[in-house]
Image 1 (tube, rainbow, N blue to C red):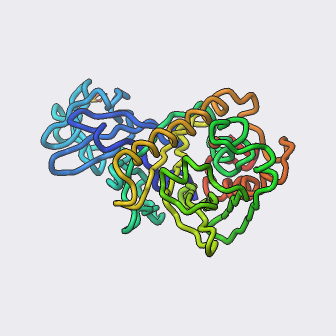
Image 2 (cartoon, rainbow, N blue to C red):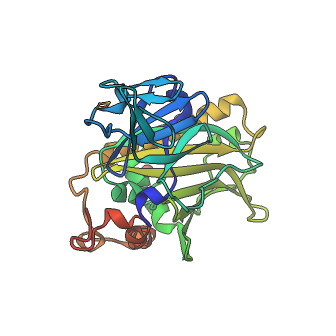
Length: 328
Ligand code: FES
Ligand SMILES: [Fe+2]
């Protein structure tokens, strides 16, 4: 499949009001506009008449009117010229959808399944959005290993020894790559108190990487010392939107059980997950090797999940990986 065959979150819903907004996906510049009858539309940003940027246009009753000569396009991309009423034209129109307070975009004739991740027993308690100065590969790599916890996220409290001794489990099937991280140390008393967990509880994180689009779901919770049962308390769902070959939009949705967390705890979750992402951005924005392939890196035991996911990328986003060079 090509990138535009998949659904990607592209803009928080509240950022699209009555004016058109430019977004980017897979190196394409796209204009979004909200029309009272036609809904949310997404068109190629270049006006087919003489190339004006349609994000300077105005939403009118029949569609989006170009700022230059007033050619007007509806949500399906059909256009007409007010000064040449017989002249009709067609521009590229993308498919849009609203979900989880975001506007999602896919290509004109997409058959891809929609990555519906909301769950009946979990509420959306926050979202983080960051533009990362790196291509999609190193951004995903970062979310598929825990070796960087003691150094990049020192405040989390994991020591080198803990990461070394933790149980790492990797499984895969056609649709997913799964990784589990099970440190053996009990949780810090403060964390235990905040979440009212039994003495001896241990943290776990299960990560699943999905194929369409490429996104990861991180279940985090605690293992009950009495029966070793898992209890998921927080789910992070992370999308990696390829804007262009050197920038990625990172969108992380936070899901938690309603009632389990007070407003204060939700604020704590938002603050700490935001801090984690910002730690990661310091690394990702400053990588020297942003375009390294698997064979160019010296990988270790903690990198097994990322190797698997990297293998799948050329199939998932085929057009981003031209055959001649192996990568754009
Ligand atoms: S360039 Fe858009 S109407 Fe002429
Ligand atoms: Fe990280």
